[in-house]
Image (cartoon, rainbow, N blue to C red):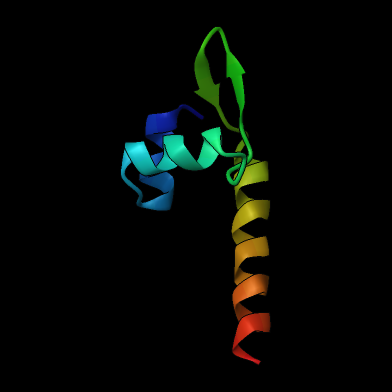
Amino acid sequence: MTIKEVSEYLKLAEKTAYRLAAEGSLPGFKIGGSWRFQKAEIDAWINQQKKRQRNVKK
């Protein structure tokens, strides 16, 4: 997935998705200066975020 595709998938601004990827919060990798993301890794990241939120609420 491209930065545009992942930002649409997560309903984020592209700048936010780029910032999260650059700081290592969002799993991605660069190819020739462009960010790329694997959907399976993004889905796993989403599930991890959900678990963290559940643990904080307890």
